[in-house]
Length: 113
Image 1: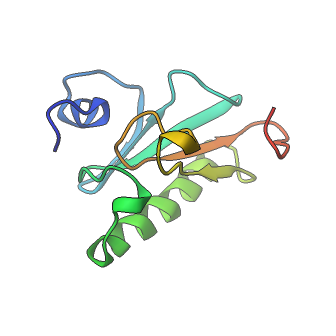
Image 2: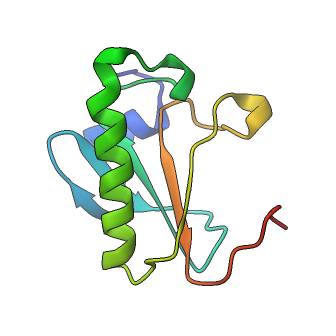
């Protein structure tokens, strides 16, 4: 874990979040600044800065992240959902801990906006 990472602090319980799922590998919680009627994040408990920092040893983490995100979306009533991961500041990543956004609850257009 990283001492100054917002998501690591949520994992450690130092910052509260409205959790919807937790196991030994992943944590999911509602986004505090939702971009859709239903918007939550799924994060690994292992600190990885972003998708570009994954190694082959992390293949299981990324598979679990995507699978669980889609399952949780369905449980939350958003079977048609957008799964988003940003890689780097220029791509919109603001918290440098690997995370996936799960968005739904309305028709999502592309490009966003």
